Image 1: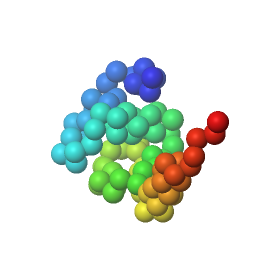
Image 2: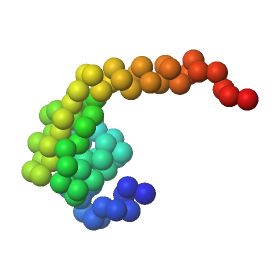
Image 3: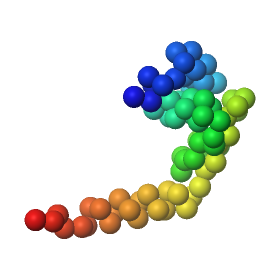
Length: 82
């Protein structure tokens, strides 16, 4: 659905400058959406910090990763409700 919101050329343009960083199509779609909405792209993936695309601001956070892992572990250990 995110890709449907993007101009067709945006992920491709972003892909040309991010391919060497190993970013996936999903990563590039998130960056394209952040660019289109003119908001920062937040991630726990430190590879994104090297993104140098005009109009895209990337904010990385080790704390974000910590919270994601903690929530994921909490969800796994939670007993299903009957």
